[in-house]
Image (cartoon, rainbow, N blue to C red; front, side, top):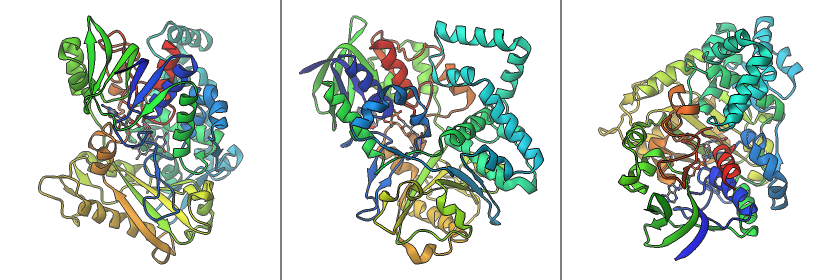
Length: 522
Ligand SMILES: Cc1cc2nc3c(=O)[nH]c(=O)nc-3n(C[C@H](O)[C@H](O)[C@H](O)COP(=O)(O)OP(=O)(O)OC[C@H]3O[C@@H](n4cnc5c(N)ncnc54)[C@H](O)[C@@H]3O)c2cc1C
């Protein structure tokens, strides 16, 4: 039996950030991970062919480089080998007819590509973020049940006046459809901006999707599209080295099955292999609400209303990843696209809306948004010299498939994702890409498809293949993530805490919940 100050269940980004803060503060920390490798949604593998280093799940780090965790740990992580490269053309929209819009890190260029009316939309949208940055980024990254948050809100009201504060509140609940001008003439601009709401788990008609699209546009314009040099696993290596240097331990292959509680306090955890790890301080859980309250904690430690809310916590749409190894860089019809980090192949807000609606009704979208990530445009070391990789993401999919909106693909009777179903859907995606990448068939060496079922098999927190470990609609965000019955990262047991994508400030690589909790208890 080993004993520690703090035990952290799961090794996702939030766990690594939290463990790093606690270990640096002199606490004896242990991270327990059920998988054979650390990092959760951060993994780099030669999944197609030797020498092609694919970020199998997450890959793009604007959220981490702008986070509190990076501000505090960045220098030490750099000393352990973490290095960032970035693109000054972070993203673009590409329509089926070939029209396109590229967003760069230059405001001047971004405005030059738009007509006068859209210029006003962009300028006003970004001004709203710039002028209210303290409040907006405070709400999106700080603990909400804190006196400091109350002070931030009151100071903002005092500075801007109640009327303007209420106006900002109203604007913040708007959808991206209400923000962007949706006309047939500006579909490429829509295709560049609107699909970003998928990356925060929303849709174009969701409340707050305009605010999130503005925040993303503002961030990409400010920092471009950073990726970890050599592959995202270098970040996990840097974190592990930092934690170990400060006396922490990270143990893989340990599936925590129980948190032991005595007289209202957690005393440690037990794992499926029968090992026991004692905790004198805290047990910190990077798991879903269902796992925490229905499996890990003893029933007698869970208040009934919290248990019920945890059971009712919803997961969102599913995701599929396609990884492609190419023998040469893609010949885009528009050659400028070779320099863009992430392209959205989409026909704008209406197309996005249609695909999401089809997915919500259990259908494979006829023409879903294709997210085309080009890691080699930022970091050529991801593939052997002269070769290339593509990172494709499809975020408008059902967890359980009822049919095909295009009426072409036969789906299994039980609606489960099978390798055959995933391959058929991937064929549809590659066929659409072919129209924009002239040499795709000639240079395609190998493709590997990960279905929603594969995602969940890799990481238990991605229930149903939901990449964000929980629907991000307003009723499950901010104060309500995972439930308004508990404050900040508290649970129903005094020294047990809940972090991870299912908790505020939600999914993404900022490591926000790990940073907030680590800062609180160190
Ligand atoms: C395909 C995909 C692409 C994404 N792309 C991006 C991106 O480019 N940029 C971005 O900012 N965000 C991206 N995201 C979102 C982001 O990666 C995640 O929100 C974030 O990494 C989640 O981190 P986490 O700390 O919540 O833990 P997770 O990464 O979910 O890790 C949790 C870990 O806990 C382990 N675990 C669970 N239960 C137990 C247990 N009982 N015992 C032991 N271990 C346990 C799991 O095995 C897992 O390793 C993406 C997500 C996915 C799925």
